[in-house]
Amino acid sequence: MFRVSRYLMLVGVLLMMSTAAIAQADGPEYFQYNVRLTTLSGGDDFATNYWNDSGHVTMWFGELGNYTDMLTIGFDPEDEINAISLNKSEKTFGAYYIALQEGMYDYMGDYDEYNHFTLGYSYALENMKLGVLYNRQNMSETDGDDEVKDSYNSFGLGLDYDFSDEVNIDATFAYSSYSWTYKVAPADTTGDGNGLMFGARAFWAYQDDITLVPVFIFRTAEWQEGYKDTDFALGLGFDYTVNDNNHIILGAKFAQAKSEEPYLTDETWTETTTTMPGFSVAVEHEFFDWLELRAGASKNFSNYKVEYSTDTPDDTEDMCYAFNYSFGAGIQVGDWAIDLELNPEALYQMGYWLHGYEDGEEPIWAIQASLFF
Image (cartoon, rainbow, N blue to C red; front, side, top):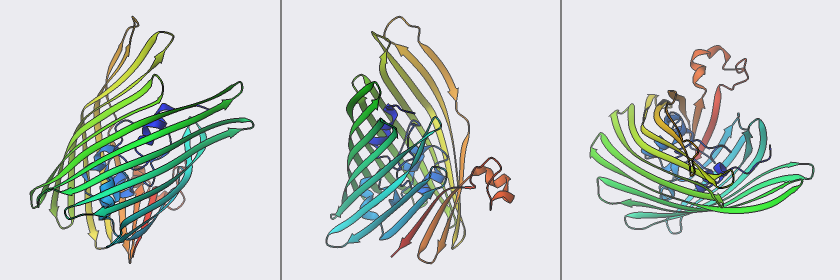
């Protein structure tokens, strides 16, 4: 189905990757997302920011310098995603990151192709690491002489700063430019837009087993004149290491997402979703040296409001979103670390693991394997 979606611009601001998404967006799955963090998020991408995982470099670019040398392969059966990335560090020259991905995404039952190229670099100073990241993304759909194209160029800057022995600070900034072509007879138009994102978080080791994690993220994007998206989120994570085998993180957030666009001839239509509060919980348990089980859950209480610039009546609705949960595992095999995001219903239909469910859903939603060297 041909369209130019403003939501794709918002996703582009975050480099189409594993990010702290505040509002669910139509479009491709996030680029090379970290399967461990996605599983622990419980369906709320903002909750991934509470975890101090160096694999989150595609949001917190300064973390690139904390990466170990590894080759990562990712596969998502549902969206036909194939991804590969390489991280390599040198004491003298810094750390490098390169990644490629291709796949399909579903828009109202119509599947479109997309591809990514990402290049990153980080350099370590005495008590900080600086990171830069570039992402190029293309999406296209053709039907005879009709054609729709979307392309993004995104640049990110990040800082990982050891403020003290107890406090570590991450700061991140990204700029994205966006262009599109809509050639469907008789229309033949083009356009462009841009977006910004910045965020900050801190890890404060309050006690040996407790870390407090405040997080703030702001994004804005205008994909075409008059069409603008703005959202922000503020959250606090409570990271508790119960013992050597059990790790728990609790999170609470306040978030607001606003979309504005022309309506009829002389009106402006504004849609605002305010989440207060949103909760998340994640648990990671080490059964054996080679096996970890993970689970995450989240629930948001939101207010939805539509406003018009003229006399059209406004519309307001309080919403309580469904309880979301996720389930997965981590397996260590020699120098390989394999992360799995499982279909939560697999717990109730174990007999179908080997050949899939009757409705066609895969028991494994995503696989990510990393070779450390």
